[in-house]
Amino acid sequence: MSRLSRFLGSPDDPGQIAGVRNRQVEFSVFGQASYPIASSLTLTGGGRVTVSDGAGKLLDDVRGGDEESSQARVRFAGSAALDWHMSPSLSVFLHYQQGFRPGGFAVASGSATQSQQFEADDLSQTELGIRWRDTARDRLSLRAALFAVDWNHVQADLVDSSGLPATANIGSGRIYGLDGEITWRASPMWTLTASGFFNYTNLIGTETAVANASSITLPNIPQDGVRIGSQWRFELARDVTLTSEASAHYVGQSHLGATPPLNVTQGQYLTSAIGARIDFPRFGISLDVSNIGDARANTFAFGNPFGLSRQNQITPLRPRTVRLGFDARF
Image (cartoon, rainbow, N blue to C red; front, side, top):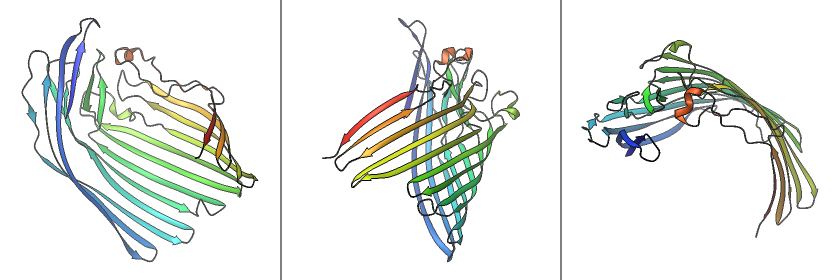
């Protein structure tokens, strides 16, 4: 059960405005099994059956409101996978998975006396990928995948013109993407890794008053990202090991929300880090430097909902940080 009470006014004597209480009961049974169709082909299937029932009502300082109940629902979320080992060094996989979140009741956006019900949202994902060679054993290895996500009745937290939040279904979304990773073991002591992703997202339908939904991207999903890392390992003496790592990480642009005043940009920053550690039989010493270039960026464009309309809120990156550590084993 969740209960949201809201107050608005002077900090010395705020007045209570309508809140909402939600009650949700769920019971789930799930399982998964794999079956080798052939020596090189494995089929995996599974699912989750959920029985749920919920109710909600408005709360304020004058009246409790009548409880609004929803009918008990039975939902099934399935998963299936095919893994084909074409050769000892190459495999192809196809995965499909479903999921959902239950609905509930919320105070209607812009209203202090009306409630609105938001529906359960459901998501299905299909992924097709390859794996070439083993990261831990082979000098060069690769993993890559294409994926598509179908997201219906998207639940989103909105902020109205007064700065008060409300939960609603804003439409249906689609996500198409590519991600991959390549690892090169240049020597037993040195490994280089590069990974990245690209996302295309779109809100293609509306269930609330959302203007120009066809041109809106889904919130908090970066368009792209890249990470490059390098690791070293040296045996300085018997039972004395030096390990070090350097990395650079880029996060692309995303939006806080789908509609004004939440359609503010965030992301688009590059950070780097380096670290080293010496391990002795009984203790270790480490030195790490993060955000070497002292980059400044907005990682999450949210703070105070009542000032969100100014669109000038940021969650900054941690500034350049140096950490010296010592640990001992007893």
